[in-house]
Image (cartoon, rainbow, N blue to C red; front, side, top):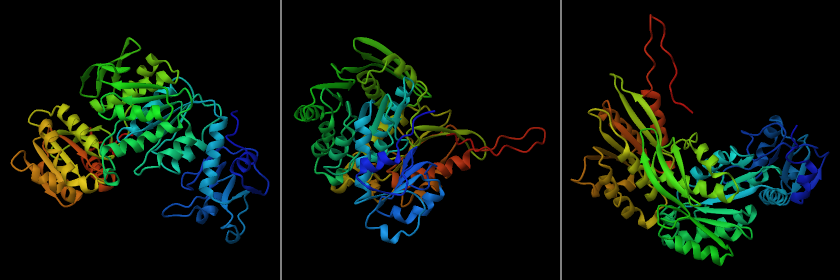
Length: 489
């Protein structure tokens, strides 16, 4: 039987809080959301932008919470809860303190990942390959902000062999306090690109904000940088200034420590050869796109630096798949018969990831009489640069050789004008209008790629298309057809 994650006394001591009631001897998890709380968890009643956790204490008790961490200010209004409490001045600060205590006792080798694109993909791939070689701890979702990082850290088991953290930002000074909690042995920066450019004046300012990750690297730790990023020298200087003495690189550039030596796309993914420590490692990826190969090189580099076996890590990548909305392919059926392919890139979008998704579409081979169709929605948080950055997608679109481009959203108006007389295209005011237009255009053999910033709503388009076009299997001998939608995981 495994040891509990915490005891109630541990939590009271770590948070500096005042215990009320008999502290539990076993706390098995840490929660800030009653919808996902498991029996035995401690519930931290943090106050978010929309909700205050103190309004959900009874739901936490009903879900089986072992104890609650609450604010001293809220205590008089709580009434009888019937659970042990730890009373603190500030609940989010208490969560940070518990995370710091988890880091202090941890024996894990720890990696932190940031970058403008590829953070979550790299984190998930690292969790997968490291999990094949020992116990690994990482968040299941993109818990990369001011509450997600402390929460993930507070959940770190004392005996985990590896831990993987994703750290994000959209303003300066957001990574700095988080990485000083995590204190990684390895810090990875995937790529600097024009994401959140509306909050910054230049790519150099974004690089400076991302470089805050080096300030938390432990003495003797390592920075892992993208050798193909024009801002790598700037990042390397920032790493050295922060006291990082070992700097390694991944990518295609000559001299990269974890270097791409060969690449071949396939219908279901890709195969590539990486040169690591003077030897060649062959890797088969089940998810397509050259950009994922870049992420995989970073994964192999980080695994190597954490002390994992690189050959085993490469083998584990064979069974890894990128998450929902990150290039997943769906074979769908038209009402009149015939199949078409949907490439789901709807998770998020910025100029760099748009280019990567268009390159993925270019690699996709339509069926006989089929065409390449791009569904593109607004890229957000680009500020005054937005119109120009949208228009700049005209070049990558032409390189992808689509037969039809369907655009949606006010920011895509700039690209609509830039594509005039260059490629067949349409602009639509809403994602629903775009979807209706697509349905009218579809024919057997088509390959369709959907990409937009997350809040635009393209994931709903994708879900609707999968639901409508995942046709039931025809019945045999008068038996009823299957109701399986074939959506997959």
